[in-house]
Amino acid sequence: MPTTHQIHVEQSISLLLNFLLAAFDPEGHGKISVFAVKMALATLCGGKIMDKLRYIFSMISDSSGVMVYGRYDQFLREVLKLPTAVF
Image (cartoon, rainbow, N blue to C red; front, side, top):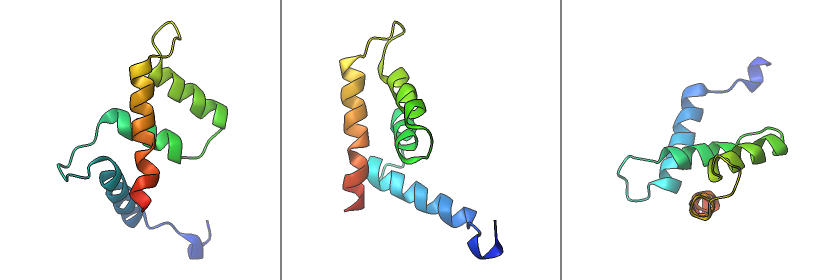
């Protein structure tokens, strides 16, 4: 990577952490569920869409591959917090 395009790691970590806390911990308790972090990273990070969808489905389905409504509901609630944290 050219020196003019270096990533400031500490600043990037701080920005991501503050964004995730604003999205998933609006009361300021300093805690975020592991599920919320996994879903946020799977949604925000780059990668092949099919790989991301497979991962997300593995998180919201049971061992026989059937989607669990409660987990799907939780997934939607967590992911929809991301755009609302921007505004």
